[in-house]
Amino acid sequence: MTEIKICGLQRVEDIEMVNKNLPNYVGFIFAESKRKITQEKAKELIDKLDKRIKTVGVFVNKKEGEVKEIGKYCGLDILQFHGEETAEYCDRFRGDYEIWKAFSVKERGIEKKLLEYKEQTDLCLLDAYNKKVRGGSGEIFNWDLIEGISERYKVALAGGITSENILEAVEKVRPYVIDLSSGLETDGFKDEEKIEEVIKKIKRGGKNG
Image (cartoon, rainbow, N blue to C red; front, side, top):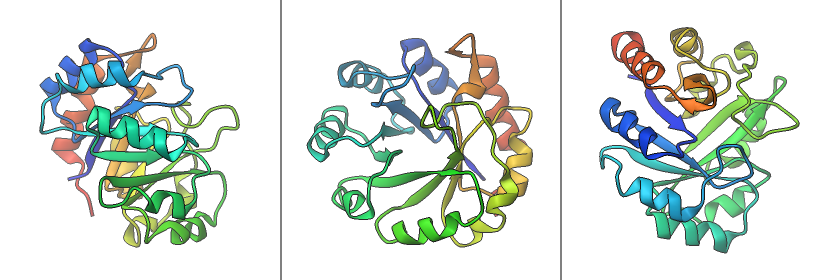
């Protein structure tokens, strides 16, 4: 079954929603974003999180020491790098964390970049390109650009995924993980009904590979 990550948690209410619905992963954003969170607030929320759910810290071009400090303080399981971090940079965290590297897709040929990072990362996250923001834009990219890529790489798919298109995304891309954020929000806040709906749809019909 395709796994689910819900990103951009900020409130105790968000934790209550995910504890009830049990996605596989939740994400906390430690980069400039409307969903940015402090390490103190993230730890407070993680302490209330069901231990079956893995935690992902999202970083953009942060100094190695800062990432390690936040990772240790919050007890993160996974580090997701969403900037220009090199493969060598990613490799410095291996052993202590699972490493995810995000790539923006705007044209064919992304596989060359994935190959560059394959040995230093555990999963590649493919997201829509937007020159103003790094993820969370709510925009979908052309999935034809990554046709067949999940047969060769462990892939997470992000970018404008909602309950309306999630099964199409699973069928077409066959990702290991579907990453959702803005598609589960109403007026900028996580919406429990939308969370319940995507989890039910995946459990009913979203088979992986």
